[in-house]
Length: 88
Image 1 (cartoon, rainbow, N blue to C red):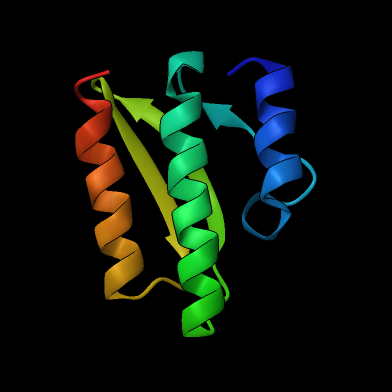
Image 2: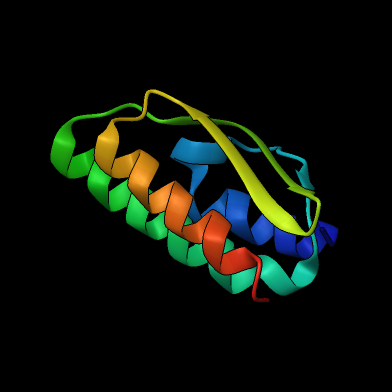
């Protein structure tokens, strides 16, 4: 992902990605990742979770999003985004 887009996601969602994170996926997934990140942050806040994203990449044309500290709802949000990426 373009460094400016990476910086945008890291700035908007520091609790998920920290100050520096490497996204190994297409720039065209920015909106998908932004929407997923927002949903995850909101859910984590409501559920009292501490989510830490460990890897975000493209594999075989679809998103792979790995995070620690998830629950069933966070996993569902991630699964939905991974499925949606196949059509982008």
